[in-house]
Image (tube, rainbow, N blue to C red):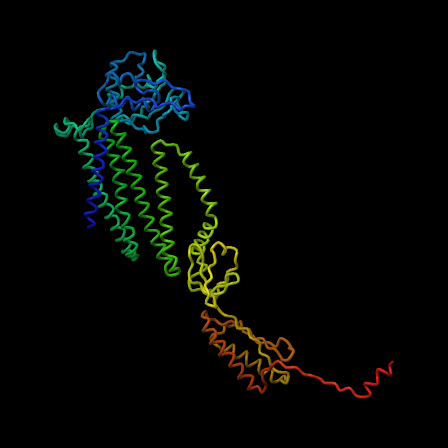
Length: 552
């Protein structure tokens, strides 16, 4: 089943490429003469040129279209003829420039200015604009410059500058047919697929399929070698990790295939107009491949985070996985969309401004919700609260049942369920009882006042010995001291740390020590005090009653 899906992916790529080439061929067979766009009502009207040369982009594409169609006389009108004597005619110059652009032009046609005044950011002098460069066979780069001129009749137009036209014969002599084209059968080089030699679409389609399977093989071999090295170093990856990274093989092979296909295709001498359509197709495929790769990577990372959260947050792991995956995929798609808009020459200033205003509005509308969501993310990342912990959150005390993205659920001792918003956890005093490493044992032993000194010293010595000899009492922390003469007792403070983490185990140790203290008190011949009061009753005698009268 997997092999079948791989075959379908490769075939789909080849069919899509053939469809793009066929569309480009159909468009090139009847190339439209570019027309100037209608001016905006508030802008001054711009006179139209019959060849669509009002803008640098319109003039460049117009020349490519008519030259590719073989209309060399019309193509020659896109050239500013130099003053020096040329060894070729205008039509020959147009034919040679078409050949040079087809075989060596480098540049992004979509970035050419669509404005009559040209690009204000271009470093060329006024009324000149750089369209790109031609890379000759020996590596030399020759800039292709467009110049804005005023013809004898009609409006100002953009044409290929005179200094560029003067370089056409030298550039043409530096080129030649690709070496491999000379080795092809005559039937392939002479047959035509629209305006293309028949071997070009065949070579591009076969190359696409071959590259895809070669990249799959290379990546699979690389993954096998990495696994072999890890096993030799006794650090084999788990089956889940290996399976997760294998999910990235297909999108990685897709990206490498498209990138290598473009590098090789540019060496085939594809006509510039077809190359323009082809590069648009490559940009779209690269963006789709990037989104595909990022989505697979998000799935891999989110699954690993979910697996790590699952033991500590079983109720939250799946919801965090779904929300995080959707957010990251949305970011990946938006990033690819912005890159694609920039690649096609669309200004991002207005788009980013709109996104910024929309983001601020959403943030204000969902302020409390976002506060709670981010609070939940921080709680899970800090691991300050885990499911099953006994905590005090503000005035609430109980066991944590769930840590969600919006709130934390706490089961109180009264068996009620309290939901504390995660945004409030940043301002609350959170006391995690389950995280303590030992328990404090600090009772007060009260002996009644009939206890003499010898009995008191015997009890103190026995309690100290009981604490020192107990295996659960931390050494060096125990003490037993007479601290006060209470209202009805002699108070002995017992202080020690019990080195246990479980509360029920602590209760057992506490009970054992308290029973031992009771035995010590009984053996000493004394007893524990109980709250008591002594009442003194006075009797009024006759002498006492007569005393006030004597004073009087």
